[in-house]
Image (cartoon, rainbow, N blue to C red):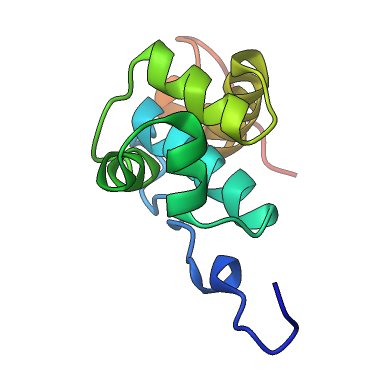
Length: 120
């Protein structure tokens, strides 16, 4: 890629973390964000990754946007095309899922019955 060519990876916005702390993120959204972030980090296009994974560009796009629930075969193919294993993608997705749902763990709705919260 020449230096005067716009970097398409930088133009792909990542979906913001949901504002409502009580809403659990969907697995397909988290996995899609991980795939998109990895692809963008490698400065690769949807077309490049989809061709390497032998899946269609529109389907990969829908997976990245959380619109499609990808099979394990599709996720493994996408991971391989990014130089990752399926376990790598799932581990990154788990880390992201934990990060996104961390604020909800401290909500009073999730505290055990009889628990007391003291203010400092």
